[in-house]
Image (cartoon, rainbow, N blue to C red; front, side, top):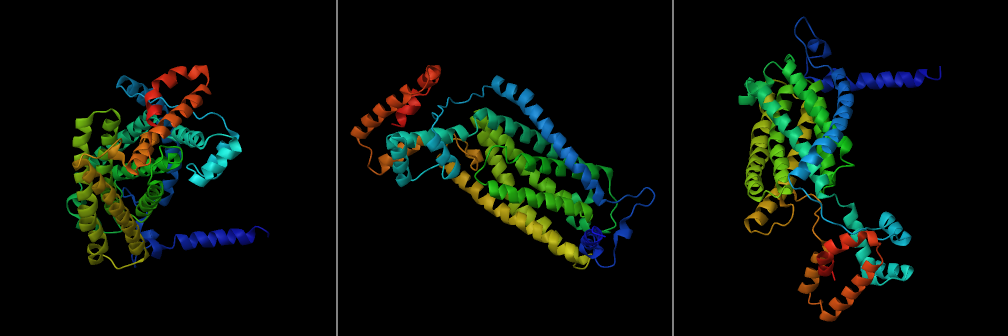
Length: 410
């Protein structure tokens, strides 16, 4: 008796969630898309296979990055910069973890008093500590190698699957016979592959190379997973497949561009960056809204009446379009800097954390403000020398390698 009420609530919720009016146009129910003979339709329970597939893909990624990408990067000349580690300091580490990774001037003065250290040395400690958290070039190369491989496979698979489909050439065909459109085996595996990759990527985002647009990426991945899952259950396979192929076409180019940039193949990366920018702007700002979104919003009304799924699906597509506009502004900004020759570091991945020395940036800012004096330079250099003497003898080689880098920060 105690469990009867919750069980009834679960059953009621399940019945409400799968109510046919949420998923299909008026006049159609789940009975209309049941398997009959050799004709099969998408079944929501197929999506349960995705979780083990995604977990397996995470394991495959780990093995690929460790035993293929990392050795390949070393052979191709990928080398990490030498980074000096911040010396142990409980007070500074606690502040770094709980308050701020980049304290303000007043906080620096307070911390210097607590630690009995010069303000400049405390500031340098936080700089080194931030550099420790930044991903190395090898880590970024391995991550991009995996994503490049996955997106390239996804794009090629999408072309092979959709090339001979009528809706690939005429989006109006997406709605002919909807929702009683049989599920083809190739479409089933294409959907499973795309959803598995999207879910595996979401699983690893917290441990992956952090990007400045991390929140937008999370919104994008969540929207993608919901969109793919809903389109599969509601048999929106045709329009959903076009959306997936359209997105992966430019994403594959972006990952390959970053891969070439990490290898320092400048001419090839520059050429591919221009290609990516063109494909991105055309597919995301022209093809997607004018073909896919227009077809889903207006052309579909010639074949069916509005229902909940119509509004829900198009709302998700509108969210994607807003993200397209946001990322297009970043791409245009990068193009502007590229044309003017002002791109530095990983210009093709403007949303990733850069390894550029913050000390050089700080020195340039001070020179622009007219506050860099020769006396400060000599004083800070002497402080830098005393700071170096505190490191262990095992780091002497690293100190010699990074001396020019440290001198710039004095």
